[in-house]
Length: 258
Image (cartoon, rainbow, N blue to C red; front, side, top):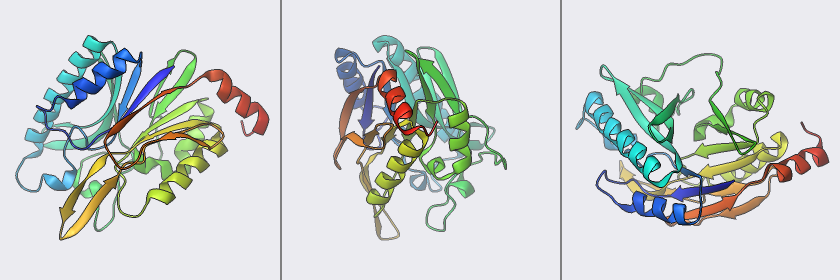
């Protein structure tokens, strides 16, 4: 299956770059396109007191409608992190869009640190036990989609293994000095679970309280053996890749982790 990973900064709603990338993806016969976190919506710290949650949700509704049109126009499925909500409540999630059809996954675990507290900002419900994230099948490959922060939780990987997932798509917004740690983490999860991992990070630099937040890119395609097959540097760009069920099955038979 042909897949494209788009490594982008935050885009304004009027920005035409996304459509240009989708046009290029169509030419390369990509069937599925995935974006990083906070590309279609600004980073949550950008909102401050300027916008109510209802206004943000209204912007996101328009973004989803535009994605549906682009998906239909280019006959490409799109995985896009998105903020959504109603009744002055705002949620952080990930949308799977295929034309007018869409499924939205509500992120189950949010970052909750003093300097980066999404849980305090968003209204995502917290459940003690994980529920199954988005899982779908294309060309005999079973895909799952989880949020970047959720890679840290063993429980979700047990669920994905039981669901016989082949490929995990992980949109991210990774920054500071975490590049090596994130590479190691993605490689470990891929290898020990015999799943390919597609990690899509965003790029760009922001400043809060006189501290630079540099989103460093390094989007990755890691095979089910935990080896990096392709990656991007710190600039805007795209990975085009092919994944085959047979190669994943061969790795599973060799290591017998599943």
